[in-house]
Image (cartoon, rainbow, N blue to C red; front, side, top):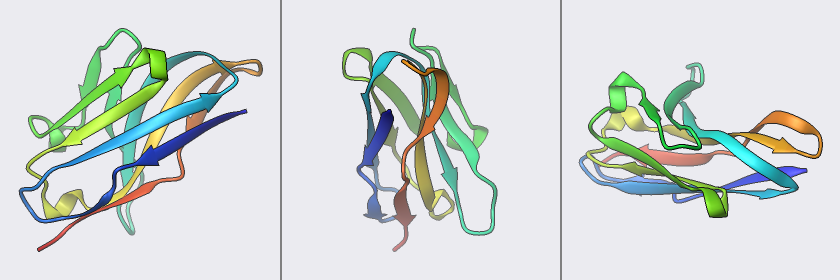
Length: 119
């Protein structure tokens, strides 16, 4: 069994910054892609940022230049640094990981952490 635990969400003013963290734990052999998705009320879940095991990154156009993603392979942890936050960044942010465990390769999701950007 693999679990993803997120932390770092909260309320921030427009223009502010937040850093999200997500640690994967359990019977993990190797973690491949890791990333972050978000879902605002009434919308579909969308990709925010993705990072491969080797460090190649991909960002949604809406966050390019403002957000950065990084990871620590030894800790099976992924981070999302969010700068210059806007009200439209308000959403529940979900951590994602593609993990090989004793059960083989599977997608795993965190429980979600709320990010609210408001004055």
